[in-house]
Length: 469
Ligand code: BES
Ligand code: MN
Ligand code: MN
Image 1 (cartoon, rainbow, N blue to C red):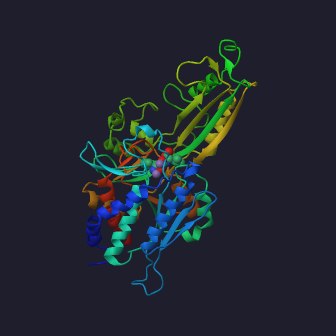
Image 2 (cartoon, helix red, strand yellow):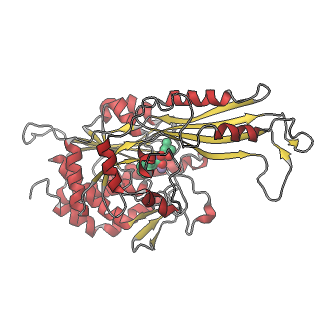
Image 3 (cartoon, rainbow, N blue to C red):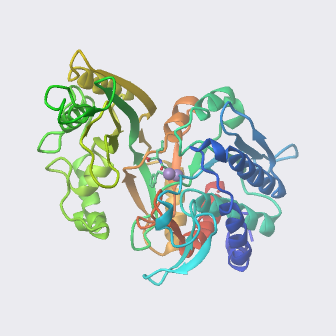
Protein backbone atom coordinates (compact mmCIF):
# COMPACT_ATOMS: atom_id res chain seq x y z
CA UNK A 1 0.00 0.00 0.00
CA UNK A 2 1.38 3.42 -0.95
CA UNK A 3 0.99 6.56 1.10
CA UNK A 4 -1.54 7.77 -1.43
CA UNK A 5 -3.94 4.82 -1.26
CA UNK A 6 -7.11 6.00 0.52
CA UNK A 7 -8.62 2.56 1.16
CA UNK A 8 -7.68 2.22 4.82
CA UNK A 9 -8.62 5.79 5.75
CA UNK A 10 -11.96 5.42 3.95
CA UNK A 11 -12.92 2.37 5.94
CA UNK A 12 -11.93 4.19 9.14
CA UNK A 13 -14.30 7.02 8.18
CA UNK A 14 -17.10 4.44 7.92
CA UNK A 15 -16.23 2.78 11.23
CA UNK A 16 -15.93 6.09 13.07
CA UNK A 17 -19.10 7.70 11.71
CA UNK A 18 -20.98 7.67 15.03
CA UNK A 19 -18.05 9.18 16.90
CA UNK A 20 -17.69 11.81 14.15
CA UNK A 21 -21.36 12.70 14.56
CA UNK A 22 -20.92 13.02 18.33
CA UNK A 23 -18.14 15.55 17.77
CA UNK A 24 -20.19 17.48 15.21
CA UNK A 25 -23.13 17.60 17.64
CA UNK A 26 -20.87 18.96 20.39
CA UNK A 27 -19.74 21.73 18.04
CA UNK A 28 -23.31 22.49 16.97
CA UNK A 29 -24.38 22.93 20.61
CA UNK A 30 -22.29 26.09 20.96
CA UNK A 31 -24.36 29.09 19.76
CA UNK A 32 -21.64 30.96 17.86
CA UNK A 33 -23.75 33.75 16.36
CA UNK A 34 -21.16 36.29 15.29
CA UNK A 35 -23.48 39.16 14.55
CA UNK A 36 -24.91 39.29 18.09
CA UNK A 37 -22.45 40.72 20.64
CA UNK A 38 -23.96 38.74 23.54
CA UNK A 39 -22.71 35.57 21.82
CA UNK A 40 -19.08 36.73 21.62
CA UNK A 41 -18.05 34.38 24.43
CA UNK A 42 -19.78 31.47 22.66
CA UNK A 43 -17.81 32.31 19.51
CA UNK A 44 -14.57 32.26 21.51
CA UNK A 45 -15.53 28.92 23.05
CA UNK A 46 -16.15 27.50 19.58
CA UNK A 47 -12.73 28.70 18.42
CA UNK A 48 -11.08 27.02 21.44
CA UNK A 49 -13.02 23.81 20.84
CA UNK A 50 -11.81 23.61 17.25
CA UNK A 51 -8.26 24.57 18.10
CA UNK A 52 -8.10 21.88 20.80
CA UNK A 53 -9.50 19.30 18.40
CA UNK A 54 -6.85 20.14 15.80
CA UNK A 55 -4.12 20.02 18.43
CA UNK A 56 -5.29 16.49 19.21
CA UNK A 57 -4.71 15.65 15.55
CA UNK A 58 -1.06 16.59 15.81
CA UNK A 59 -1.46 20.17 14.61
CA UNK A 60 0.38 23.13 16.01
CA UNK A 61 -2.78 25.09 16.71
CA UNK A 62 -3.71 28.42 18.27
CA UNK A 63 -6.65 30.75 18.79
CA UNK A 64 -5.41 34.04 17.41
CA UNK A 65 -6.85 37.33 18.59
CA UNK A 66 -8.09 40.00 16.18
CA UNK A 67 -9.85 43.31 16.92
CA UNK A 68 -13.06 41.27 16.50
CA UNK A 69 -13.62 37.54 16.90
CA UNK A 70 -10.62 35.20 16.99
CA UNK A 71 -9.26 33.16 14.10
CA UNK A 72 -8.04 29.58 14.53
CA UNK A 73 -4.79 28.77 12.71
CA UNK A 74 -3.35 25.26 12.82
CA UNK A 75 -0.35 23.88 10.95
CA UNK A 76 0.89 20.41 10.20
CA UNK A 77 4.06 20.71 8.16
CA UNK A 78 6.75 18.19 7.49
CA UNK A 79 9.78 19.23 9.48
CA UNK A 80 13.40 18.19 9.07
CA UNK A 81 14.40 14.71 7.95
CA UNK A 82 15.31 13.60 4.48
CA UNK A 83 12.53 13.78 1.95
CA UNK A 84 11.94 11.04 -0.51
CA UNK A 85 12.64 12.58 -3.92
CA UNK A 86 13.60 16.21 -4.24
CA UNK A 87 10.21 17.80 -4.84
CA UNK A 88 8.66 19.78 -1.98
CA UNK A 89 5.42 18.32 -0.67
CA UNK A 90 2.23 20.09 -1.69
CA UNK A 91 0.80 22.42 0.96
CA UNK A 92 -2.92 23.13 1.24
CA UNK A 93 -4.70 25.83 3.25
CA UNK A 94 -8.15 24.79 4.40
CA UNK A 95 -10.63 27.60 5.11
CA UNK A 96 -13.97 27.38 6.92
CA UNK A 97 -16.05 29.52 9.27
CA UNK A 98 -17.17 28.57 12.76
CA UNK A 99 -19.74 31.35 13.15
CA UNK A 100 -23.41 30.91 12.30
CA UNK A 101 -26.41 33.06 11.42
CA UNK A 102 -28.97 34.23 14.00
CA UNK A 103 -31.87 31.82 14.61
CA UNK A 104 -34.88 34.07 14.21
CA UNK A 105 -37.74 33.48 13.63
CA UNK A 106 -37.27 31.04 16.50
CA UNK A 107 -40.93 29.96 16.58
CA UNK A 108 -40.57 28.25 13.20
CA UNK A 109 -37.95 25.78 14.44
CA UNK A 110 -39.32 22.30 15.19
CA UNK A 111 -36.40 21.59 17.55
CA UNK A 112 -33.94 23.84 19.35
CA UNK A 113 -31.48 25.49 16.93
CA UNK A 114 -28.57 24.55 19.22
CA UNK A 115 -29.99 21.21 20.26
CA UNK A 116 -28.99 19.11 17.22
CA UNK A 117 -31.18 16.13 16.33
CA UNK A 118 -31.33 13.46 13.63
CA UNK A 119 -34.55 13.50 11.62
CA UNK A 120 -35.94 11.44 8.77
CA UNK A 121 -36.30 13.67 5.73
CA UNK A 122 -39.25 13.07 3.38
CA UNK A 123 -36.71 12.20 0.65
CA UNK A 124 -35.51 9.11 2.57
CA UNK A 125 -32.42 10.98 3.76
CA UNK A 126 -31.33 11.19 7.40
CA UNK A 127 -30.99 14.86 8.34
CA UNK A 128 -28.79 16.54 10.93
CA UNK A 129 -30.93 19.49 12.06
CA UNK A 130 -29.38 22.50 13.81
CA UNK A 131 -28.18 26.03 13.09
CA UNK A 132 -24.81 25.64 11.38
CA UNK A 133 -25.40 21.96 10.50
CA UNK A 134 -24.74 22.84 6.87
CA UNK A 135 -23.35 26.42 6.98
CA UNK A 136 -20.63 25.86 7.95
CA UNK A 137 -19.90 23.61 10.95
CA UNK A 138 -21.04 20.38 9.28
CA UNK A 139 -18.91 21.18 6.25
CA UNK A 140 -15.87 22.14 8.37
CA UNK A 141 -16.14 18.85 10.25
CA UNK A 142 -16.11 16.83 7.00
CA UNK A 143 -12.55 18.10 6.56
CA UNK A 144 -11.47 17.64 10.17
CA UNK A 145 -12.92 14.12 10.32
CA UNK A 146 -11.09 13.28 7.09
CA UNK A 147 -7.85 14.43 8.73
CA UNK A 148 -8.61 12.25 11.72
CA UNK A 149 -9.15 9.16 9.56
CA UNK A 150 -5.98 9.76 7.55
CA UNK A 151 -3.95 10.17 10.71
CA UNK A 152 -5.43 7.01 12.20
CA UNK A 153 -4.59 5.12 9.01
CA UNK A 154 -1.10 6.47 8.32
CA UNK A 155 0.07 8.16 11.52
CA UNK A 156 0.53 11.38 9.55
CA UNK A 157 -0.73 13.30 6.50
CA UNK A 158 0.33 12.90 2.86
CA UNK A 159 0.81 16.65 2.40
CA UNK A 160 1.34 19.79 4.45
CA UNK A 161 -1.89 21.22 5.84
CA UNK A 162 -2.76 24.59 7.33
CA UNK A 163 -6.26 25.12 8.71
CA UNK A 164 -7.74 28.63 8.96
CA UNK A 165 -11.14 29.02 10.64
CA UNK A 166 -12.76 32.42 10.99
CA UNK A 167 -15.62 33.65 13.13
CA UNK A 168 -16.90 36.73 11.30
CA UNK A 169 -17.97 35.32 7.94
CA UNK A 170 -21.69 35.65 8.57
CA UNK A 171 -21.39 39.17 9.95
CA UNK A 172 -19.23 40.44 7.11
CA UNK A 173 -16.66 41.27 9.79
CA UNK A 174 -13.56 43.29 9.02
CA UNK A 175 -10.89 41.23 10.81
CA UNK A 176 -9.95 38.58 8.28
CA UNK A 177 -8.36 40.63 5.49
CA UNK A 178 -5.91 42.49 7.80
CA UNK A 179 -5.07 39.11 9.40
CA UNK A 180 -4.23 37.64 6.00
CA UNK A 181 -2.13 40.69 5.11
CA UNK A 182 -0.26 40.52 8.42
CA UNK A 183 0.47 36.79 8.21
CA UNK A 184 1.18 36.31 4.51
CA UNK A 185 4.27 34.16 4.81
CA UNK A 186 2.78 31.97 7.48
CA UNK A 187 -0.46 31.32 5.61
CA UNK A 188 0.64 31.06 1.99
CA UNK A 189 0.18 27.57 0.51
CA UNK A 190 -0.09 26.08 -2.96
CA UNK A 191 -3.84 26.16 -2.98
CA UNK A 192 -6.76 26.88 -0.66
CA UNK A 193 -9.54 24.39 -0.02
CA UNK A 194 -12.87 25.96 0.93
CA UNK A 195 -15.79 23.86 2.14
CA UNK A 196 -18.71 26.30 2.15
CA UNK A 197 -20.60 25.60 -1.09
CA UNK A 198 -23.25 23.29 -2.54
CA UNK A 199 -23.34 20.16 -4.63
CA UNK A 200 -25.88 19.81 -7.44
CA UNK A 201 -29.20 18.13 -6.74
CA UNK A 202 -29.36 14.40 -7.32
CA UNK A 203 -26.12 13.61 -5.51
CA UNK A 204 -23.89 15.12 -8.20
CA UNK A 205 -20.64 16.39 -6.64
CA UNK A 206 -19.47 19.81 -7.78
CA UNK A 207 -16.63 22.28 -7.61
CA UNK A 208 -17.67 25.92 -7.70
CA UNK A 209 -15.49 28.26 -9.77
CA UNK A 210 -17.60 31.45 -9.77
CA UNK A 211 -19.01 33.32 -6.79
CA UNK A 212 -20.77 36.67 -6.76
CA UNK A 213 -19.51 39.61 -4.74
CA UNK A 214 -21.65 41.62 -2.34
CA UNK A 215 -22.26 45.27 -1.50
CA UNK A 216 -24.46 45.87 1.53
CA UNK A 217 -26.08 49.23 2.25
CA UNK A 218 -28.49 50.38 4.93
CA UNK A 219 -30.29 53.66 4.28
CA UNK A 220 -32.31 55.85 6.61
CA UNK A 221 -34.48 58.59 5.17
CA UNK A 222 -35.60 61.31 7.61
CA UNK A 223 -38.33 63.88 6.93
CA UNK A 224 -40.32 65.71 9.67
CA UNK A 225 -38.67 66.06 13.09
CA UNK A 226 -41.34 63.80 14.67
CA UNK A 227 -44.07 61.29 13.74
CA UNK A 228 -47.18 63.14 12.55
CA UNK A 229 -50.95 62.63 12.31
CA UNK A 230 -51.44 61.52 8.72
CA UNK A 231 -54.78 63.36 8.38
CA UNK A 232 -53.57 66.69 9.70
CA UNK A 233 -50.25 66.63 7.80
CA UNK A 234 -50.60 64.02 5.05
CA UNK A 235 -50.07 65.33 1.52
CA UNK A 236 -48.32 68.50 2.70
CA UNK A 237 -45.63 66.87 4.84
CA UNK A 238 -43.25 64.53 3.01
CA UNK A 239 -43.65 60.84 3.88
CA UNK A 240 -40.25 59.10 4.10
CA UNK A 241 -41.84 55.73 3.29
CA UNK A 242 -43.06 57.13 -0.02
CA UNK A 243 -39.60 58.47 -0.76
CA UNK A 244 -38.09 55.14 0.17
CA UNK A 245 -40.35 52.98 -1.98
CA UNK A 246 -39.96 55.35 -4.95
CA UNK A 247 -36.19 55.26 -4.64
CA UNK A 248 -36.11 51.49 -4.28
CA UNK A 249 -38.56 50.90 -7.13
CA UNK A 250 -36.48 53.05 -9.45
CA UNK A 251 -33.45 50.78 -9.03
CA UNK A 252 -34.89 48.14 -11.37
CA UNK A 253 -36.74 48.54 -14.66
CA UNK A 254 -39.61 46.41 -15.94
CA UNK A 255 -37.23 44.06 -17.79
CA UNK A 256 -35.33 43.31 -14.59
CA UNK A 257 -32.29 45.46 -15.41
CA UNK A 258 -30.67 47.56 -12.70
CA UNK A 259 -30.88 51.23 -13.62
CA UNK A 260 -27.81 52.63 -11.83
CA UNK A 261 -25.52 54.36 -14.34
CA UNK A 262 -22.42 52.27 -15.03
CA UNK A 263 -23.77 49.27 -13.11
CA UNK A 264 -23.05 46.85 -15.96
CA UNK A 265 -19.62 48.29 -16.80
CA UNK A 266 -17.17 45.40 -17.15
CA UNK A 267 -19.90 42.73 -16.99
CA UNK A 268 -19.68 40.06 -19.67
CA UNK A 269 -21.87 37.13 -20.57
CA UNK A 270 -20.37 33.69 -19.97
CA UNK A 271 -19.11 32.10 -23.20
CA UNK A 272 -21.74 30.29 -25.28
CA UNK A 273 -20.09 26.95 -24.47
CA UNK A 274 -20.48 27.56 -20.73
CA UNK A 275 -24.10 28.66 -21.12
CA UNK A 276 -24.75 25.49 -23.12
CA UNK A 277 -23.25 23.33 -20.36
CA UNK A 278 -25.28 25.11 -17.70
CA UNK A 279 -28.45 24.47 -19.67
CA UNK A 280 -27.96 20.77 -18.85
CA UNK A 281 -27.44 21.35 -15.13
CA UNK A 282 -30.98 22.35 -14.30
CA UNK A 283 -33.85 24.32 -15.79
CA UNK A 284 -35.84 27.21 -14.29
CA UNK A 285 -38.27 24.78 -12.67
CA UNK A 286 -35.42 22.93 -10.93
CA UNK A 287 -34.34 26.11 -9.14
CA UNK A 288 -37.72 27.74 -8.56
CA UNK A 289 -40.10 24.78 -8.24
CA UNK A 290 -38.87 23.58 -4.85
CA UNK A 291 -39.54 27.04 -3.35
CA UNK A 292 -43.01 27.34 -4.82
CA UNK A 293 -42.23 29.63 -7.78
CA UNK A 294 -42.05 29.22 -11.55
CA UNK A 295 -41.31 32.55 -13.28
CA UNK A 296 -37.67 33.83 -13.25
CA UNK A 297 -37.84 37.44 -12.04
CA UNK A 298 -34.46 38.72 -13.22
CA UNK A 299 -33.34 40.12 -16.55
CA UNK A 300 -35.19 38.76 -19.53
CA UNK A 301 -33.12 36.63 -21.86
CA UNK A 302 -31.34 34.73 -19.07
CA UNK A 303 -32.26 31.45 -17.43
CA UNK A 304 -32.86 31.32 -13.68
CA UNK A 305 -29.46 29.68 -13.26
CA UNK A 306 -27.74 32.40 -15.31
CA UNK A 307 -29.58 35.07 -13.36
CA UNK A 308 -28.12 33.77 -10.09
CA UNK A 309 -24.67 32.60 -11.23
CA UNK A 310 -23.68 35.12 -13.89
CA UNK A 311 -25.78 38.28 -13.61
CA UNK A 312 -25.48 41.06 -11.05
CA UNK A 313 -28.56 42.15 -9.15
CA UNK A 314 -30.01 44.32 -6.44
CA UNK A 315 -32.18 42.93 -3.66
CA UNK A 316 -34.17 44.70 -0.99
CA UNK A 317 -33.52 42.64 2.16
CA UNK A 318 -35.73 44.56 4.53
CA UNK A 319 -37.85 47.71 4.95
CA UNK A 320 -38.88 49.25 8.25
CA UNK A 321 -40.79 52.37 9.18
CA UNK A 322 -44.19 53.56 10.35
CA UNK A 323 -46.69 51.33 12.07
CA UNK A 324 -46.71 47.58 11.37
CA UNK A 325 -48.23 46.40 14.62
CA UNK A 326 -51.67 45.11 15.36
CA UNK A 327 -54.69 47.12 14.28
CA UNK A 328 -54.23 50.40 12.49
CA UNK A 329 -52.57 53.72 13.16
CA UNK A 330 -52.86 56.80 10.96
CA UNK A 331 -49.25 57.83 11.33
CA UNK A 332 -46.96 59.71 9.02
CA UNK A 333 -43.54 58.47 10.15
CA UNK A 334 -40.51 60.66 10.62
CA UNK A 335 -38.08 58.02 9.34
CA UNK A 336 -37.95 55.06 6.99
CA UNK A 337 -35.19 52.51 6.61
CA UNK A 338 -34.14 49.81 4.19
CA UNK A 339 -31.37 47.24 3.85
CA UNK A 340 -30.30 46.72 0.28
CA UNK A 341 -27.70 44.39 -1.18
CA UNK A 342 -26.11 44.18 -4.59
CA UNK A 343 -24.64 40.91 -5.86
CA UNK A 344 -21.81 41.53 -8.22
CA UNK A 345 -20.16 39.48 -10.92
CA UNK A 346 -16.62 39.59 -12.29
CA UNK A 347 -15.66 42.98 -13.69
CA UNK A 348 -17.71 45.08 -11.26
CA UNK A 349 -16.13 47.37 -8.70
CA UNK A 350 -17.95 47.37 -5.32
CA UNK A 351 -16.85 50.94 -4.54
CA UNK A 352 -18.27 52.23 -7.83
CA UNK A 353 -21.55 50.40 -7.30
CA UNK A 354 -21.86 51.82 -3.79
CA UNK A 355 -21.10 55.34 -5.00
CA UNK A 356 -23.62 55.04 -7.86
CA UNK A 357 -26.29 53.81 -5.45
CA UNK A 358 -25.71 56.67 -3.00
CA UNK A 359 -25.78 59.26 -5.78
CA UNK A 360 -29.01 57.73 -7.12
CA UNK A 361 -30.66 57.96 -3.70
CA UNK A 362 -29.40 61.45 -2.84
CA UNK A 363 -30.69 62.82 -6.15
CA UNK A 364 -34.19 61.76 -5.12
CA UNK A 365 -34.30 63.28 -1.64
CA UNK A 366 -35.89 66.78 -1.39
CA UNK A 367 -33.79 69.50 0.21
CA UNK A 368 -35.86 69.61 3.45
CA UNK A 369 -35.30 65.87 4.07
CA UNK A 370 -32.11 63.86 4.57
CA UNK A 371 -30.61 60.44 4.05
CA UNK A 372 -27.94 58.53 5.97
CA UNK A 373 -25.99 55.57 4.63
CA UNK A 374 -24.43 52.76 6.61
CA UNK A 375 -22.08 50.34 4.90
CA UNK A 376 -22.42 46.57 5.41
CA UNK A 377 -19.40 45.10 3.69
CA UNK A 378 -18.25 44.99 0.12
CA UNK A 379 -16.53 42.23 -1.78
CA UNK A 380 -15.69 41.53 -5.39
CA UNK A 381 -16.87 38.49 -7.29
CA UNK A 382 -14.44 35.59 -7.59
CA UNK A 383 -13.53 33.73 -10.73
CA UNK A 384 -11.28 30.70 -10.35
CA UNK A 385 -9.30 28.80 -12.96
CA UNK A 386 -11.13 25.91 -14.61
CA UNK A 387 -8.12 24.10 -16.05
CA UNK A 388 -5.67 23.57 -13.17
CA UNK A 389 -4.07 20.23 -12.31
CA UNK A 390 -5.49 20.42 -8.78
CA UNK A 391 -9.01 20.96 -10.10
CA UNK A 392 -8.64 17.89 -12.33
CA UNK A 393 -7.33 15.77 -9.47
CA UNK A 394 -10.15 16.89 -7.18
CA UNK A 395 -12.83 16.28 -9.83
CA UNK A 396 -11.48 12.74 -10.25
CA UNK A 397 -11.59 12.13 -6.50
CA UNK A 398 -15.17 13.41 -6.22
CA UNK A 399 -16.33 11.36 -9.20
CA UNK A 400 -14.81 8.23 -7.63
CA UNK A 401 -16.60 8.83 -4.33
CA UNK A 402 -20.05 9.75 -5.60
CA UNK A 403 -20.17 7.50 -8.67
CA UNK A 404 -21.37 10.44 -10.72
CA UNK A 405 -19.29 12.75 -12.90
CA UNK A 406 -18.31 15.79 -10.83
CA UNK A 407 -19.50 19.12 -12.30
CA UNK A 408 -17.89 22.55 -12.50
CA UNK A 409 -20.51 25.10 -11.45
CA UNK A 410 -21.16 28.70 -10.46
CA UNK A 411 -23.00 29.99 -7.43
CA UNK A 412 -24.96 33.09 -6.63
CA UNK A 413 -23.68 33.23 -3.04
CA UNK A 414 -20.69 35.15 -1.74
CA UNK A 415 -17.60 33.99 0.14
CA UNK A 416 -15.45 37.11 0.45
CA UNK A 417 -12.34 35.24 1.63
CA UNK A 418 -11.88 33.68 -1.81
CA UNK A 419 -11.07 37.07 -3.35
CA UNK A 420 -9.02 38.05 -0.29
CA UNK A 421 -6.87 34.92 -0.66
CA UNK A 422 -6.23 35.79 -4.30
CA UNK A 423 -5.37 39.42 -3.52
CA UNK A 424 -3.47 39.05 -0.25
CA UNK A 425 -1.74 35.72 -0.75
CA UNK A 426 -1.85 35.17 -4.51
CA UNK A 427 -3.68 31.88 -3.94
CA UNK A 428 -6.55 30.32 -5.84
CA UNK A 429 -9.14 28.17 -4.08
CA UNK A 430 -10.88 24.91 -4.80
CA UNK A 431 -14.46 25.38 -3.60
CA UNK A 432 -15.66 21.91 -2.70
CA UNK A 433 -18.82 21.61 -0.63
CA UNK A 434 -21.47 19.01 0.05
CA UNK A 435 -24.40 21.23 1.03
CA UNK A 436 -27.67 20.90 -0.87
CA UNK A 437 -30.10 23.48 -2.17
CA UNK A 438 -32.76 22.34 0.33
CA UNK A 439 -30.49 22.70 3.39
CA UNK A 440 -32.31 25.89 4.53
CA UNK A 441 -29.09 27.70 5.36
CA UNK A 442 -29.79 30.99 7.21
CA UNK A 443 -33.40 29.79 7.75
CA UNK A 444 -35.26 27.90 10.48
CA UNK A 445 -34.64 24.11 10.60
CA UNK A 446 -31.29 24.25 8.83
CA UNK A 447 -30.16 20.70 8.04
CA UNK A 448 -27.27 18.75 6.55
CA UNK A 449 -27.84 15.36 5.00
CA UNK A 450 -26.10 12.51 6.79
CA UNK A 451 -24.96 11.51 3.30
CA UNK A 452 -23.36 14.95 2.82
CA UNK A 453 -21.49 14.54 6.09
CA UNK A 454 -20.43 10.93 5.58
CA UNK A 455 -19.56 11.02 1.88
CA UNK A 456 -18.23 14.57 2.27
CA UNK A 457 -15.71 13.25 4.80
CA UNK A 458 -14.82 10.37 2.48
CA UNK A 459 -14.50 12.87 -0.38
CA UNK A 460 -11.89 14.91 1.50
CA UNK A 461 -9.90 11.75 2.21
CA UNK A 462 -9.80 11.05 -1.52
CA UNK A 463 -9.13 14.68 -2.48
CA UNK A 464 -6.22 15.00 -0.03
CA UNK A 465 -4.55 11.82 -1.25
CA UNK A 466 -5.15 12.87 -4.87
CA UNK A 467 -3.59 16.30 -4.26
CA UNK A 468 -0.59 14.66 -2.59
CA UNK A 469 0.21 12.69 -5.72
N1 BES B 1 -21.70 29.61 2.65
C1 BES B 1 -22.39 30.80 2.36
C2 BES B 1 -22.35 31.19 0.90
C3 BES B 1 -22.68 30.12 -0.09
C4 BES B 1 -23.68 29.18 0.15
C5 BES B 1 -21.99 30.07 -1.27
C6 BES B 1 -23.95 28.19 -0.78
C7 BES B 1 -22.26 29.11 -2.21
C8 BES B 1 -23.25 28.15 -1.96
C9 BES B 1 -21.83 31.93 3.22
O1 BES B 1 -21.73 31.58 4.58
C10 BES B 1 -22.77 33.11 3.18
O2 BES B 1 -23.86 33.00 3.69
N2 BES B 1 -22.33 34.22 2.61
C11 BES B 1 -23.08 35.45 2.65
C12 BES B 1 -22.16 36.63 2.53
C13 BES B 1 -21.64 37.17 3.84
C14 BES B 1 -20.72 38.35 3.56
C15 BES B 1 -22.76 37.58 4.76
C16 BES B 1 -24.01 35.55 1.47
O3 BES B 1 -23.75 34.96 0.41
O4 BES B 1 -25.03 36.23 1.62
MN1 MN C 1 -20.93 29.69 4.81
MN1 MN D 1 -23.80 31.73 5.46
